[in-house]
Image (cartoon, rainbow over all chains, first blue to last red; front, side, top):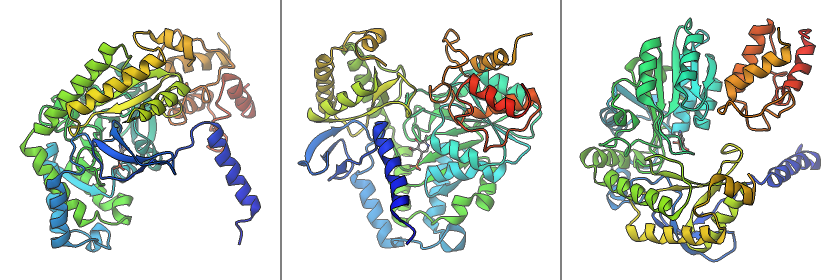
Length: 415
Length: 82
Ligand SMILES: Cc1ncc(COP(=O)(O)O)c(C=O)c1O
């Protein structure tokens, strides 16, 4: 056995370093279906506690919705449990094709290919159709899965300052001679909750003959007046060449992702994207339930409208109470605390008050930008939000950060 | 003509700083200071390669080697640029 005390020592000291840096991640154990209220055990060994969930991506409240659970059950009865195959051998059922078609229609694109996750979609898509003659120009705050996907591709990588259109334009000029130029961005950025300026991005793409890639994982199902995503919000449906998104957040929350867009690009993914070719097909249960999800979000805006009302209430409530939040309109609402330790202490106190939210700090967000990220859901009722707001205010008073400027908070706690 | 250090510092300010007034000098930590991340470091590497007509192998383009203008100068010395 080669795993001797030496090897073990290396890894143990690396793990100790992670702990020393204060970035050691621990799981909280949920003893309930995903919902606005959940039973949680944390820290391990303590009593189960009922808390209001302010940190899930269950934006539309569909994760445990009875109609979705029922659709999953039917899928299980009619199409079985697993496929035991990748898509192109014997892993494609009629319901997989149905889901791809429904997503194409919902997103307003030409074609769609499913992946085991959006992480996989992002890992596979760039390599599948770009090569050394091409360049990918990404917003600096794109999701880690996009960074990984770009690293796997042979095309040249470049980046532009977050949402800085002048900088993007400079980069497009710098790379004018490339065969394909691809602008790469998230639709909604998951840490700040801001939207990419897709109208401006499309304008620049047209001016400089570039393609546009958008990861709409934090938008699909609820951004835009019928919830199609950021391209609907900015009125550029049909102008985004590649959309990747996940079924693991608003759209049911189980798992799965896709690449949707120009049909030749989707076809290249079917021929060459490695996570599609070499990883198992999405389970029939999930596919059947996802078909139901797309039916629900295509036929009614009721859930995204409720989410919008909740978001407005929450943003206004926090601002009126004197918190500093990141401006925006998405249900991702970061409450700024600037100091890393304060964000951890604040989250702990919220938890004692029955509110479950997470503090984020460097290196997940920039230095001096520590925050509690809250996320709204259509599963929240006003009573949940009122209770959560009262808890935020109570803890905010304890740390004396209400109605204080950024400088005052940093002055008190450091950054 | 300004020296190599100034040229590199100017590039870094223009390419990476959101806030133009932010203080940055030759010893400011770039990577560990959260100004340049490993993802966006590529443009700095390419700038140095194009400007000084060198090829920096990936093994040498470490976060440590790029962590300050001073460190970058040490790296460039290996390529006889300075
Ligand atoms: C922007 C973005 N893209 C992709 C993903 C990954 O999605 P999935 O969970 O389907 O792999 C996430 C999830 O964290 C995300 O936030």
